[in-house]
Image 1 (cartoon, rainbow, N blue to C red):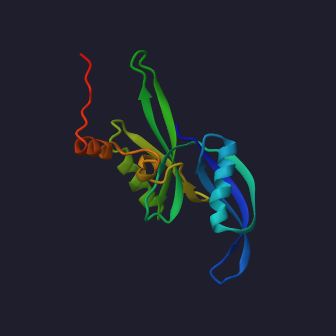
Image 2: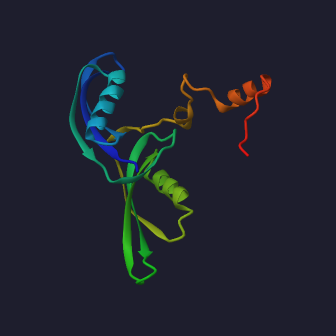
Image 3: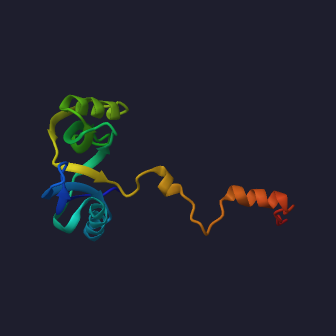
Amino acid sequence: MQTWFSCKVKYQKIDEHGKQNRANETYLVEAINFTEAETRIFEMMEQYGNGDIMVTGISKTSFSEIVNYDDGQYWYKAKVTWEDMEESSGKVSRVTNHFLVAANSVKQTYERIEENLETLMVPFDIPAISISPILDVFPLFESEEETTKIPEHLTPISEYEDNKEENNITDIEEE
């Protein structure tokens, strides 16, 4: 299960005019616990900031879905609701989820949520969309390549199979 933490960070940053300013910004970090979130935000901010980096706050967020699009300039938070009926008792309950969506406008955010929820077979409502103070999102794994990269000390099975054929090695089957 994904756990996202909102991290407020103060640091020195250089603006477009070359002037050094104190920045107070919010970032979203995926982590297992608060300690890991703090460690990860320090690692990420060392790439961007100069001088002292101070984490002024870390809090767990209630985002159930992060919808990232490369062309999204801002992060919008959206409240999405639908009704869920328990089959055994027939009781209807209201389900609320919070989405964080990368988009350029409220309208585009709405469209992107609809696109992501079109497989949901129940009607849903989006009662609230607002711009978020979050500037960037740092997931645990940036891409599939990072998670599937084979460590140097291991041999890929394709190479093992090729070596087996070249050296005429056969597997011994037990009878």
